[in-house]
Length: 171
Image (tube, rainbow, N blue to C red; front, side):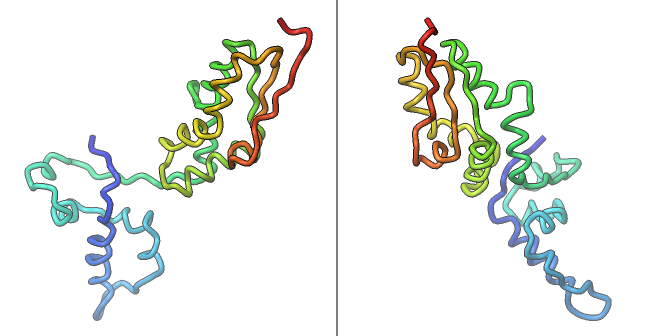
């Protein structure tokens, strides 16, 4: 299994695909050549060779499968759904100090949006959350009587601190 971003390979693919759009019997050029996810579907071993991979290596790749880019909804699902989802991990971390962590829906959407804008994909989600919660994660365990910590969109954007809900009866 080989994986990677292969930065710049789309120009090799475009050059090959655009050659086919000239002359009789040629495919008509469409806007699909402007969409990376459509271009990459046409990847062939010879494109990898032109990209600079050595023939001995390319020959060991029996099948080429391309993946779709992640969209905002995919990133939101990655944040929430897996058994070890990031949001669940952060909730578990704070629960060790008997503090409930809540992410508002807009905050989750903003985390996904920022990762998408940075083009960091799913790997970038943790960095966005860390950036938003770093100070809070450090100071919260020493706070007295905090029952709940609510993360809003403004927290993710760096415009506000998380909302802390206190319970005076908590020990």
